[in-house]
Image (cartoon, rainbow, N blue to C red; front, side, top):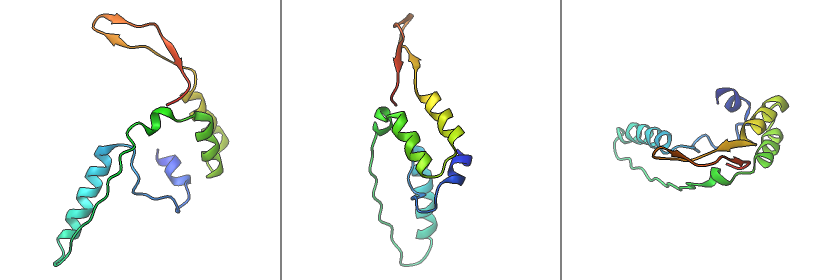
Amino acid sequence: MRQIKDLLPPSLDPMQFAYWDDAISTTLHLSLTHLENKDTYVRMLFIDFSSAFNTIIPQHLTEKLSLLGINTSLCNWILDFLTGRPQSVRIGNSISSATTLNTG
């Protein structure tokens, strides 16, 4: 993550989070620090795109990363990681047959 973040342009908003716990801990820290000052207040807006990454098309993601300047070998590694992944579901002691995923 650090390697990718270091390569991204500064124009991207650093206050976007993939996980609620990161967003909450950062927001809580920043808010409480700010509220220590006299006569201040905090406004917050949370937008939850809960399943946004479940339907991502890996080829589109790597194209966008490439346009942002991420090197080709890292883009290819991400594409390889996100495509052709077998997934099965365990229910109790039973496991479903595997299906291959190319999104998410």
